[in-house]
Amino acid sequence: MDNRIKILLVDDEQDILDFLSYNLEKEDFEVHTASNGKEAIKTAEKLLPDLIVLDVMMPGMDGIETCREIRQISALKNTIIAFLTARNEDYSQIAGFDVGADDYITKPIKPRVLISRIKALLRRGSSTTENEPNNVIEVGGIRVEKDRHMVVKNGIEIAFPKKEFKLLALLISKPGKVFSREFILQHVWGNEVVVGDRTIDVHVRKLREKLGDDYIKTIKGVGYKFDF
Image 1 (tube, rainbow, N blue to C red):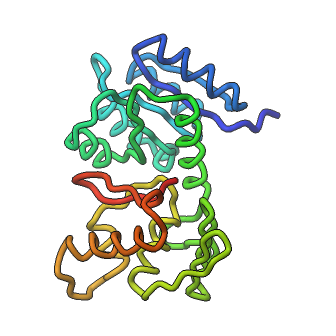
Image 2: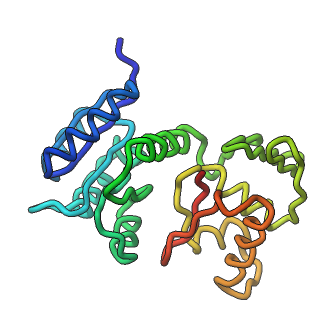
Image 3: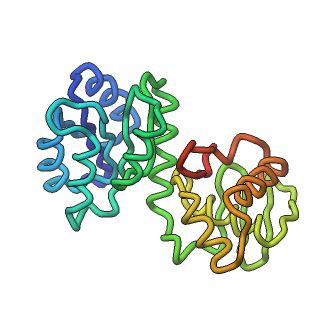
């Protein structure tokens, strides 16, 4: 029985499909392709892939509409979807996240970066949900122990106040997942009165000061994610 991770690539350019397929198959992924939105929906419903890499700009049904329809299929509600796009405008990313995308990968992309991003997304997908996070999470040399309120980076313990710790624990619980500002406010501050979005920005800045700038990524107009 083939237990390889299944990836569905969707793009109207055959050379892109060939390039991505070649590099992913070298990593022992089971790769399937589709050249348009309607074909992607049919293939995804039959295949039930672990991850879908979906081009945004396609004729007919574009990636945004394709993603929206895929999310309407019960069996695919939690499938990881990463948009592949040559566009980097904030509005296109916001539209993608609004219909259920998990991440954006911008063309052109180097094979090593592509593989790293996909593996990070798969790790995020295999972890528990936001409501039931692991008590111990270790990603990218950073270890978070929730029960002990402890953060260790490369063997060195770093002290974090309560809100900074909760924010880090949330972001690291799903590496690669973009958390909106609204979601962060709800899950870190709850019903507490906060000054506004600047509150999040200040706490993110403090995380970067202690961990370095490589871990917490800003998605303009949307929110933040933990990556490395």
